[in-house]
Image (cartoon, rainbow, N blue to C red; front, side):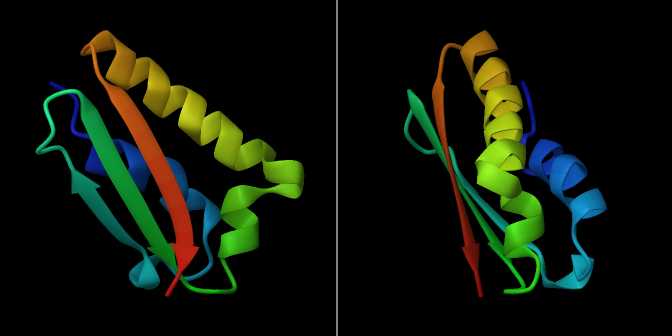
Length: 81
């Protein structure tokens, strides 16, 4: 079973300037869906989303592949604190 919190942390921490401000909440209580929320310092949101959302899209693609392997769907929200 994939630990999505650790996967998200491994993907996002190298991108941010304030790693201590990163909070990741994963709700996998629903058997078919996984809801993930990443809270960042407001100065890091642009770095994680990327120009035109390209970095966020790449992160979501990796998460979708992992969730699909387990027969689930995953949703990722990226917000500032």
